[in-house]
Length: 387
View 1 (cartoon, rainbow, N blue to C red):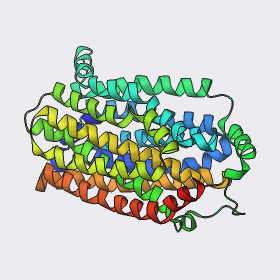
View 2: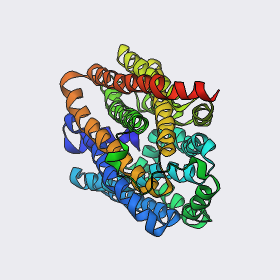
View 3: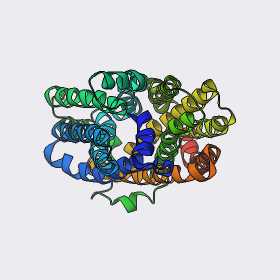
């Protein structure tokens, strides 16, 4: 559905400056839901909580499809709220994987969850053009097609999670914490998120993922509109977004292993450098292949920062701190991404695609510098001492 958002938004609103609004609404909904799920999931369990989140995505897809048919931008934004609630649950599932695995395998556990979305993420954008043709064939608006396809997938996902996610991950995570007490931080009572942020490792983890997510959302969310404005086809848009999602997900299995063996800091540093390279390449040409390469690199950079940053955060938390802290972390991620997406349409309309990428590249410098400082000040001396 991602390639359709900017296009649907500009058509329903009649204003290109509104192109980033739907993605901003999704991210704002993710922010609200992430913190809420962190609290609720401790009470009802991970299986029911994830199923509930996907159920909201089903509702969001239905409302979005209806909004396209009604040609109503406000109703379309309402559908984005439901999709955001579902996305929040899906994103938090990476921490569910990390807490039911041994601490030394957290990086690869998180990467497997990210990898699990590879097929759908790569094939999904390729459905942009054919789903539009399907929609026309059944009497719907062409742009309703991606939301119809998404509806089917969300329904299937909800059923599979509710029936198949057994035993309850919350109980398994308690057992893992008992089996590996040496990896549990000895801090007594659960610390607040503000207290945790005073730890350099937590700050590095949070900033790396927050910046990576917001830059990725800002650039990715406006690229389909940019491509249409430079007269590239829907097929070109599908190919570019498939390259982007391939970069985001396909190398996850290697990212997780790198994070576990090479170190969280080195992977984060590599991810920020790759993201900066993407920002340099993206505005250089109007040729589809170069935009595809830039968006592919954007996806790889995001993947490195997202997997390694999430693993680094999980390393710092006790069992009692995990759900709420991880929810608060995703709250910050989504607020930053929402702001980036909301501003992307305005920036694009006034200053163009190049400025979007310049902002993204400059923003990526901050986690790069902070991670290098943390690595050489804290992590490298520890690695030398243990060698």
